[in-house]
Image 1: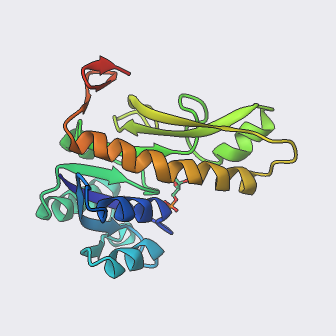
Image 2: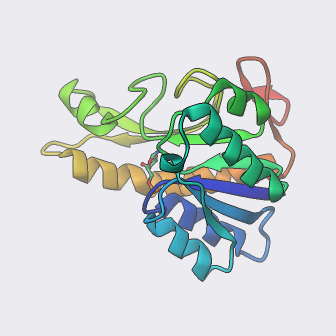
Length: 203
Ligand code: GRF
C-alpha cells in the first residue's frame, strides 16, 4: 500500500509512520511527504528517511481551489492508495475531499465528536473533563466530522496543563495512526456512507 503523508509542521506523527513503515513486516510504504509550509521540520524527517519530500506552498496560490488542485496534482504523481493528513493545517475543499473519498485519513487530538477545531487540550481542561484523547477518522466534507476509526483515551490528571496533556495524547497518537494505516493497508478497513467498517463490523 502506497501512502502519501501531508504535513504542516514538526511531523512527529509522520515519524511514527516512517518508523512503522520501516519495520520488516510493514504493510505499507510512504511514497511521498508533502508540506504546505517550506519550513516544516517533517520535510527533514522525510528526506532523512529517503522519502521524496515536496512543498506546495499555499501562499503561492490565489485561492483555496487553485491550491487544492495543485495539491491533488502533486499527490497523484505519486499514485498513492491512501492519503494521510498528519498535522496538515489547511482546510480542504469539497473537491479535494471527494477526490480521495474513502482513502483520506486525519488524526485529531480529541475524543471526537468532542472538540472539533483547534485548542482541543485547553478546551478539555476548561470543561473540567476527566478524560481526553485522540481520534483517527476518515475525512469527509465536514471538518473533523468524518467516521471515526480508532480512539485512544487519556485520563486528565490533577494539575494538568495543555502542554502536559498534549504530550501524553501525542504518545497515543503515535500508536493509533500507524495502527489505522496498517488496517487500511491490509484491506480490513473501509468507509461506508457515515460509518467506518473494520473486518466487516461497523465501528
Ligand atoms: C497532532 O497533535 C495532530 O493530532 C494534529 O496536529 C498535530 C501534529 O503534530 N492534527 P505533528 O506534526 O505530527 O508532530
